[in-house]
Length: 223
Image (cartoon, rainbow, N blue to C red):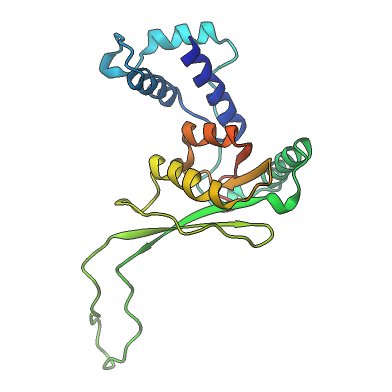
């Protein structure tokens, strides 16, 4: 029961921070925790099913399934005055309620760069339809993680991995080994993140909560 209580609390916390989890993500998280603690269950493939979910809903009536506010794939449509105003209201509420000074505000983002460069413009005969410039055979990419505070402070460089974008594990490692060691002693303080799936991990939010760091997702498609 204590495992369920911890997971439900973390799930509700992540939803408030604009990192909602699906039903399957919650069940997989519970299955992973049970397995890591060596608890034997009858879960099929180690993941609780619909019957378990119905029981969980009865034990924790405060959780429900809701459809998130729709957001078009078009950034232009998403960039509405209501959405932006709502986001800043949440940010001001977070800072006012916790008496956070603006200099303690951090923003992290990541971008991927390919090793294969685009050839520069070159001189060619008129009328020639196409010609080729040499590039590297590799299509691998590297992720650059930038984290800056409102007063211009930056964190140190972080590690990369096989995939271009940060996975859950590396996201947690970056937060623990890079951000927490470079963000200073000011507490509490907010960390603003793009709502990319790699950041949507309960472990990161749990560590942040314990260290009095408030993680808040930026408004989707507006960054």
